Length: 193
Ligand SMILES: [Zn+2]
Image 1 (cartoon, rainbow, N blue to C red):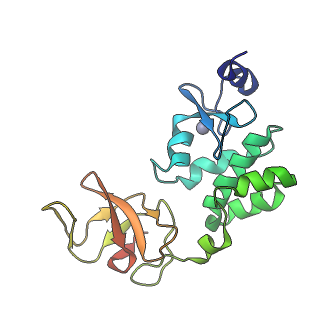
Image 2: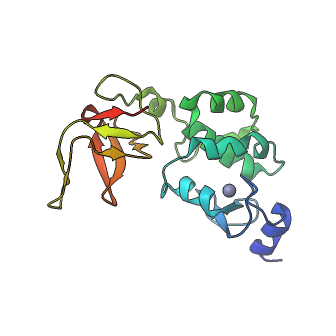
């Protein structure tokens, strides 16, 4: 049986994280040397794009892990652990993480890509008023910013939706302005309510 067929059967043709249906993709959970059904999960586009970082994390979407983290499939448990760690600043994910039990081998696998490193979470991204920024927040620019490599200036007061945090630099966030993904300094933004 092909990996794909086996996965569809296991997943009952639904995203193994959020239960959404087609289109579904096979996600090889890194680090993978030889993909097989034990190292892959079937995910929908929404899950895949956020896992890969193509889309900003939508914390609300990941409420689905409340159910899927109890999957008997180790690969699903590992991805649930990684995604919960990415959003654990939102408090409810930490509660789920406390309940999610991975055996030793699975935990080593889950941690293999650096997700959930303590250092990463020690960094706090603060806006110009010291308010803590979270992935998915909307912020407002507090000064005109020249967008590197273009003649475009992002005006003060511009709203940037669905920001993501640069994990290794507390002074940098990323967001889309004028359709372009750019890095913005946290001291030049204000969190919108
Ligand atoms: Zn999904």
